[in-house]
Image (cartoon, rainbow, N blue to C red; front, top):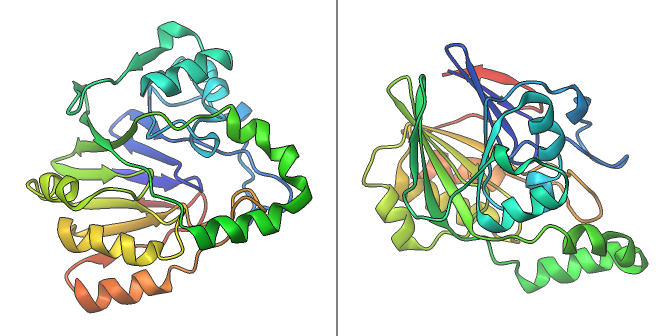
Length: 258
């Protein structure tokens, strides 16, 4: 399979002749780093689009992308309501409202699990508010209009490999232990939303013991709301605690074959 990272939590997955997307978000402001040259208006692929939760940096561009591709969007009911309010056709949405929901396609299998959003810690909130300061009113509508809803993690069985995607890092220990009952080949783990996010992500790796870890969401996608996350503590922790796990750090729009 071919995995392409689009920045934030966005991925393009290609297997055989099928392309599907996960949390495809390409819009940035001028201060974003790294620069994303792809525009949502230019994307015309994605037979299926899988969503982890309803925040703007996960679904803002979905109505445009799905509208161009005629793809089917799999998401929570809250995210579905948001997408419909932003112009996506209701017939293109499949609401995921059961833990363990699964669906088969010609080239792969997808299964959703109820998950949890990372809890923003006080220090990170205060630091972000200090950065936004008087500009807060400018960003309030974007934050208000994209409520979180039920968080989903997604397990994909592709080419006899299991790829597991998390869009946020709030999973309790019992959730991870349940998911670890099946061996994970590739773990896509987000690094955003908490001052100690690298320590949190390392716990995911320690419990799930994947063969490959691909960090994501560490980029400064929409400053001053976001900031670049130093992922070196995670890299060092994996090398120290999980030496059998290979960590792949991808550049924006980079593709790898696994």
